[in-house]
Image (cartoon, rainbow over all chains, first blue to last red):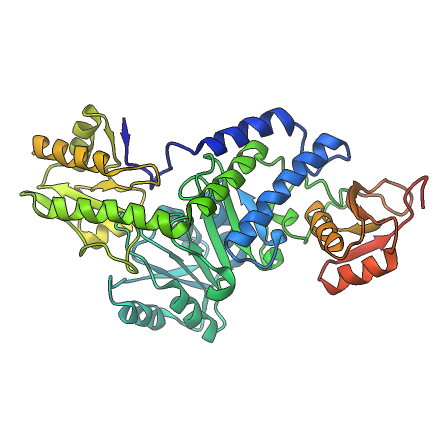
Amino acid sequence: MIYLDNAATTYPKPACVIKAVNYAMNKFGANPGRAGHKMSIDAAEEIYLCRKTAAEFFNAPGPECVVFTLNCTHAINYVLKGLLKPGDHVVTSCLEHNAVMRPLQKMSQSGITFTSVKVFPGDNDATVNAFRSALTEKTKLIICTHASNVLGIRLPIERIAALGHIYGIPIAIDCAQSAGIIPVDMEDGKFDYLCIAGHKGLYGPMGTGMLITKDGSELDTIIEGGTGTASDSLDQPVTMPDRMESGTPNMSGIAGLRAGIGFVQRKGIQNIFNHEMSLINYLYKKLSGMKGIKLYTSEPKFPYFVPVLSFNVGDVSSEVIASKLNDRGISVRSGLHCAPSAHDYIGTLEQGAVRVCPSAFSNMNEINTLVLSLLRII
Amino acid sequence: MIMVNSITYAMKGRDILLNYGIKAYVERTPRNKTTVGCGYSIYVPERTDEAEKILTEMGIKVAGRRERDGIS
């Protein structure tokens, strides 16, 4: 099987991740941060090490800034629902995933408004100006994807963050498609909230994600419960990360996530990016020369893209093409990719698109097989 | 024992103290009349005053001090 659906979740996982999950299941079987016995403390130590690793990887001030979540969507919901109040306005982009758009849509029923601004691929000045024009005195948050999960288009998040801070507006970044692929530096970028998938470019198990924030104590909670600390009080602790981590954590998943981040660190994030981008550039060139193939962006190049590419074959449904590729042992994603806004942007709401996303494990032979299969299908 | 607000801060504080050459261990805070809730502490058998000062300077909020049961 050739797996090119890595934008949804990476597969295979590195051997070190599988080993770390197995080890945690065997050795860290006690509830971390709840008791004083050795296995509970050992389990908490493993979780602490993952916080520390993640904080260093994203250049956050410290391990207490790292909140473990189920996934990136979970982290985004924490920010949106913890920060915004009726009457507040939010600025976002036209390329957002439903992880952002559905909570905003839901919150619009309680008096929160939002503006989706147009992104101009390859023209960061125009994109930043679009964000600037959308700001109002009621704007309380800018939230945007770092890179589109449909088109790979990368947003100039450092400049958008700088813009927001001129007006005292915090910025949250959806790093689902960027973490582990391109560097994300919290300190340098002055980002307030990083929402991260653990199971994509960081190669952790599914069911892992992170919210990284310098100070989450200003966020209202959407889940309350046991934290293993200050149990005499019925009030949710203010201290981070406990405030945002009620209930038993995904111990083995978090251990796997630490191993996944370690894998990326050893491989080198730049090497991973270069490898995946070379595959996508090669595919783009091949597809450009094929009759009937529709592409939706210019050739993906650094620094404007991450290695994700969507295409269609004439007016054929993307589902049909993906199904035919599946018959040939190739796994790609069709449809709307949970991002109707991005499809609206390129006019593919009806047809959807076929999305290809390689990983560190993908190779040129696999891309050539995909191209040959498409030639036969066409 | 130096009490802190979370096990994450206990471990971070321990690491800071170890960097200063101060022996430090993360332990569950035993319950007694003054500490009714669950929590974690950093057990610092020596140079405890210095340790508390370092922790405070490094941004670790100290929730209190208490003697470790049965020892110093």
